[in-house]
Image 1 (cartoon, helix red, strand yellow):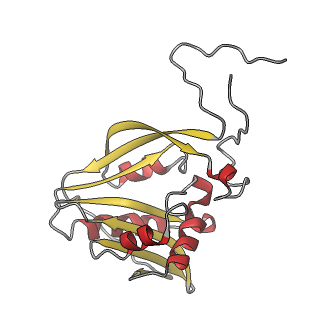
Image 2 (tube, one colour):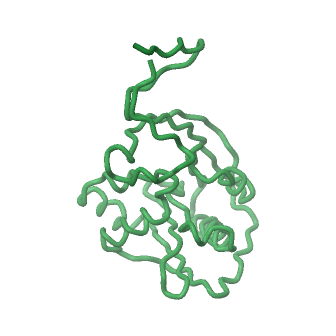
Length: 205
């Protein structure tokens, strides 16, 4: 029977079907000078009380290749309580009527705002919509009386995500490790999602 070589010192194996995700937390503590670009052919708008199925569809369209899964595994009651909360603001970018971008700001903790989700569908990346999304995020977060605006990103995300957020004015302050069930094995996402993250069915010995 084939056996795997021993792991180097400091490494820990994961059970089959699990993924380890290295998370970076970033924040800004004061409002930066920000210029929101003209939307041009795009439309940026508040999405008030979205239907759960419509929200999940856009969430999946934007996040599938980055293994966004948290809202796909959440039951209707819990999801509705979040996205319909008066201190959670959801925005979309539209192009020719189609939703191509999602922005979610969470003000439920007094004095701060979390940038929960910020992303575009795959065919909209690299065309200027991202700059509109992040500058609107910064402007609208600091329109409220907050002292801290923060987010987390991870190594599953787009390779330019870290630079994108740092250019917007966020500074890293913490690293975390998250272990999750691989959503491609649980059936929440197709096995073709996130090809940059290897799909493993067997446990490392």
